[in-house]
Length: 257
Image (cartoon, rainbow, N blue to C red; front, side, top):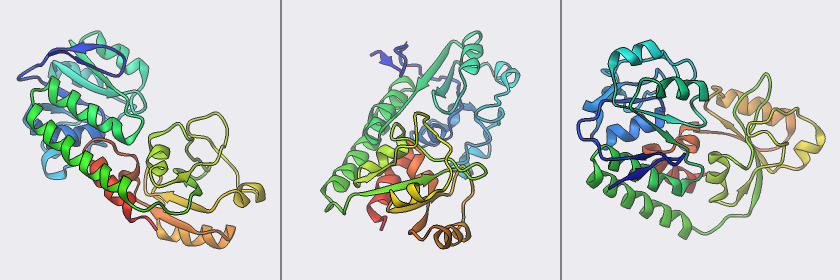
């Protein structure tokens, strides 16, 4: 069996692979597929599952990868992501790592082929199949839920400057599953914006994400008083982490007011 990644590269099953994951959400997925013993390195942002990843060496962050450390670990495979990791890192890795697997999930249902890809390459097909079945059941439950009134929501990921998301993001497509739309703030995938009357008038509520900026309930309370629209804090991991946490994310979506 041959498996194809997000940029069309093909990979054969690799029992006993030495894996470096540079994608926090995929590190968690690999652990859930029983592949933690084969993970030789991770980023400092790979924090789940905490008890398991604690023993796995770090090789920098998602953007500032320590290539020398990776080289010394001699991995057979490195898993990267188009949004999380930078193209120069990918190019450098390809010069000394036999297999650099590229991922790029853009919507909730992309988690199914993602899990199959990881399970297939790293010979954990049975666990990947079971995970996909669980995910598909949760997705069906979400689809069967009565639809709430469509809303336009401003999802904030940063302040100073204020930053949001475009409709062309995984988060926006998660929100679309419950009928929530993202306002058009321009061509950028993660646009900056300024608060003004027109912007506030065009939205129903604001969502402050708990990551990457650490928005808190205090931020939400202050902003609600400032703009006079509902503001709620949401769990950024539930909204933006694909892989294992996406299954929990579907349940989280069902509970949003």
